[in-house]
Image (cartoon, rainbow, N blue to C red; front, top):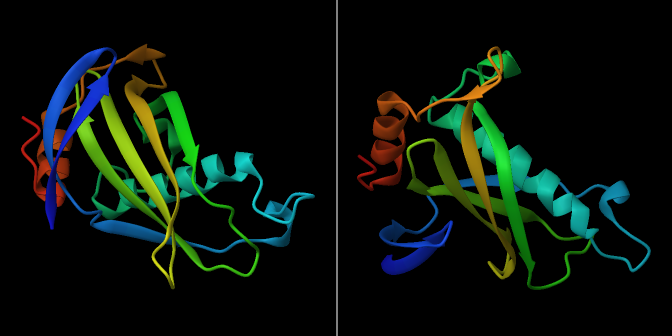
Length: 158
């Protein structure tokens, strides 16, 4: 199933033909993820999407999963929309996709779902900047990355 979506990045509007999430990462909810109200603490969602993003990046071959100095991305912006509480007893998964690629940035979208009911519990977005940790400078997103992400997502990001 595809849908046509308009997204805004830094005040500019992009039309993007997006597929459903092709990548999902199961997340195990731990006792220490739960707050005094009996549901997953809001701060844990950032950890969940970070873990899923790393698995996505390794899955599509952007990073070998070894030295973090070779992971040429740094978080520039994060947003989470909490739609329903998540309980300790739930099995959840995080959908990850790249929705846009700029000159030096990638926009990742996430959807946290209950694995059994498929109810969407939260959505999130991060803007990641291509960054060389050795020189501490931003870099253009490589053509290789564009091709690999385009192939995986089925969307032309050239």
